[in-house]
Amino acid sequence: MALPPNIILVGFMGSGKTVTGKAVSKITGFRFWDMDEWIEEKNGAKIPDLFERKGEAFFRQQEQQAVLWLSLQKNYVASTGGGAWIREENRKELLKAGWCVWLKVSTEDVWKRVGAHLEHRPLLSRSKDPRRTIEILLREREPYYALAHASVDTSGKDPRQSALEIVNAFRGDQPQENLLLPPWRD
Image (cartoon, rainbow, N blue to C red; front, side, top):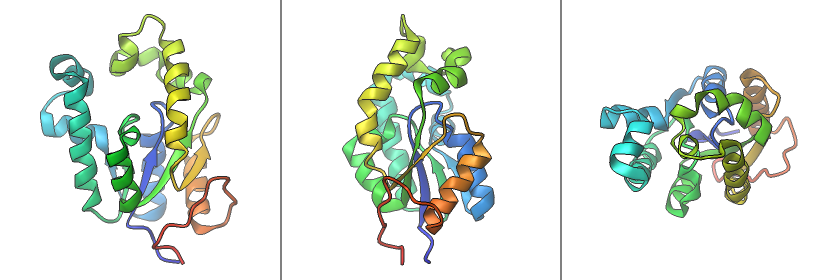
């Protein structure tokens, strides 16, 4: 079985893209890349500061540049920003750039994982009811996330367990409800 050019993790904030991505990287030997870190390094500022100083539109442009950079790379496990996948142009590029896996997560698990750190989450830190904002955004974004090649539910799981499910799904060792066969697969 041929390996994909990249393994790209998509999903909502707090779904575990970064920690699970690092675990997938160790298993596969691919390099790990985090979109938000790339944007922060490129701009010399943290994501919340970019949102505050330059606005969400600027940040979304930075995500698009990150997607284009990733599309030219090979052998990466990529953790994308929670909203990057929603833009159709980004999604099309990412689907061509590698095997995209949606990390599903429940509202409750998102709240457990990010609720104590709202200052790092611009879309939540400005909300009067962050938990309700999570519910609404998650519900709005799920149809887009479902367009990934595969999905793995991370709710109630540790990152290593989710990483093993991702690798097993790619290898075909585990049935997936939303598994599409990418062009590089036998």
